[in-house]
Image (tube, rainbow, N blue to C red; front, side, top):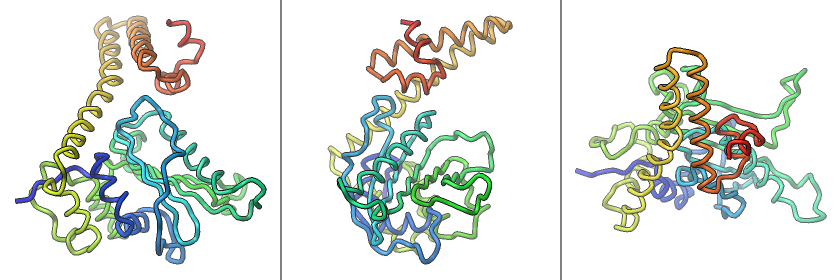
Length: 292
């Protein structure tokens, strides 16, 4: 019986979607808001030199970039733990890709649309039924008028429920593959195997196809994910618990302040930029400086 690896891990995600353009094409056509006449027919990969190095959660972010037959650029990022700055990161990457299309002196009409797709393995929107988030620029007074050159899509994988969304079968199957396949999987659903691209993706996720160094990288990835989750959640939980134990509002506030101070010191020790710490803790840069 085959043993499978979780496709959300970097080494697996990139082997499936970063090395096989036919699979990436099928996946993007299924999950992005593209009409039939906008579907991707062919694509080629782009280098990742435009991605900024962000120390915090750097191990949990996986990205793949490509361009299609129309010159449109697609950026796909797999993010395990949601942070307040992830949306800004995606917007930054998409904007950077948009700008990099032009050489000095070239006309703006040569610019092609850029799509950013963020697959999130955690929840960030309190609405339990809202898991597909599509952002684009529209005229506030006349929303039907759009600037379509830059669009972002965020998908909260934990909130995706396949039984509720049957109108896009291929989208459902691909998201089920990303969400459900892991090391505990023993039997592959027959409906997955009926789609040639997903069947191929399943085979690429088989543990037997990975080298010892790739398997070591896979284990290290999940160790890093666990560490990074604990770095934030552990401190916040301890701070909130202190507040609850006192039973007083001032105690809760004091506990939260001490928690944020501990987080700030930890992140500064890791050379995390002040702007990133501010986004995570909701403290101003001046408040952060006052803590150290």
